[in-house]
Image (cartoon, rainbow, N blue to C red; front, side, top):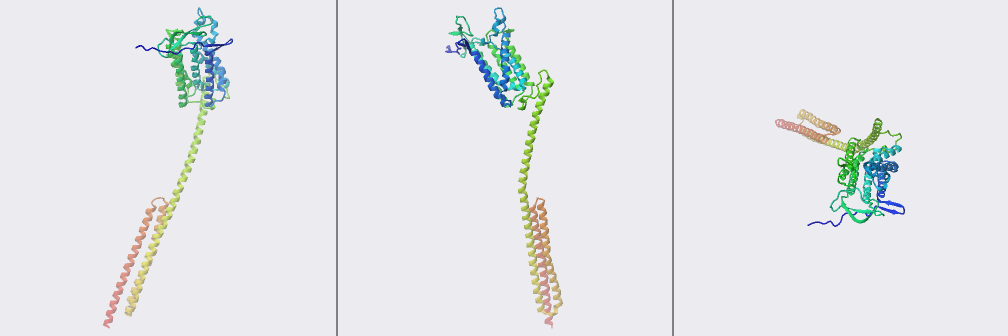
Length: 484
């Protein structure tokens, strides 16, 4: 089963419309539209990088005329047989409206015009090239539509469904004129639309350039180098598909050689050129005249000076940010330390109060037991008096012992109080060092408790001794009375 193609891409019936005596050419309109778009978009990109408004239009006044002349010169130089051959017409070399612009010559001489404009306005050419690289390539894509109207720059014959139909065109005298004539609707051949391939490739590279520029902030002419390299790479393969008349070297179209050489030069520039992107200050008109290209030492000095200014500005910003961060951290630390100091003070006061309370309780316990011992001694003295006067000496001796016991009980309170005070002092020192305040307080309370227990034990022993002594005295008195 044979698949029949129902339709191909048709070519326009004509590429020129006459308005009175003036011809309106689609090819020229596409070139003009591309230039307008490139200037408008390039201006926006230049301002986004920090450049002054109106700079792109000012430089374009130099670059566009130079580019048109350069494009025409390259076309005439590579197709010189058409104009200076045996059947050529030298005057036709000036008829630019009939088509014939070489992109390589347009970029080369257009770059010279841009360089002159940049020197006049004292702005860096590499930075300007980076700003206008994607717009220029988009302008080339728009210009390729002019080839569509002129039925030129097509490839070999094909049966692919996107093949382009080429029509016969005739002028008013019915002479074949593919450029200025009008089609009669008869298809001459179906070919590869190589101009369309190049148009789509250009749009793809434009998108890639914009994205790479946003992500990596490419500058110093390296984005322009990527544009040249990307376009050259695609153009090399498009040239291999073309079948129209062209100058060849060793059977290969001359544009293929040009594409390969320009591609290598652009890659080399991208690799060895200065990395990074110019600052906004470097895009302003310079106070001094910029060095000429052959003044290599002056060019390096100017580049180093611009890089140093950018580094100084960056260092200043970093220093300001560091100072602000340090100030903020100091304020945060001070605010965080205040609650800790207040809490520590509160803990110290609480521990001191607890120690003082423990000491007071110990003193009270010791004093109470001393009072009990005194009461027992008083009772003993009363009993001794009622029993017999004979035992006065012994009672006195007992009273002396009781007094000693009372003295011992009384001394226990100050001793306990002193130990409690010593414990409070120990607690305060522990709190001041900010460590184990709670453990120190617990230890002080334990010591106070031990002091109280020791005082109580001594009082009980002395009271028991006094009672024993009184019992012995009473028994003796009773015996003496019986004998009497």
